[in-house]
Image (cartoon, rainbow, N blue to C red):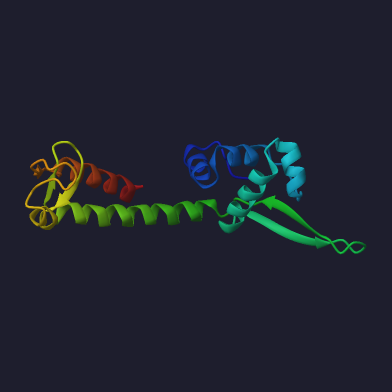
Length: 164
């Protein structure tokens, strides 16, 4: 079983299923159980349990098995958690984040920006020329925006993620 108290894993699961979903995961009974049993034992609302299970299933962290009652013909869905693939999923997320940060860094490095002193907008040079260097929101004169600090922050973040 994976350590759901690990800061990275916990943060990832929190972003996927939210606080109530994380509570459900923490209190989830062992073995195969129905969504109603999960709701009763975890004290999480049934709708939240179902939403969480479907999100976990989409991300391959929950396994569902259907069982048909031979008398009534009703289907029962039995659920169990399986976090054996979470390290792989975290690596995929890290690569995606790194790719997005590199794209943003390239965009910031290759463009010149102008900003409204009131903070209304930040425009590319071409967009600023179209508005004659006036803020389209409030009419103030746009001023050059030095994004070098933001570029430095992005570079540090990219370096930190690349080295891990």
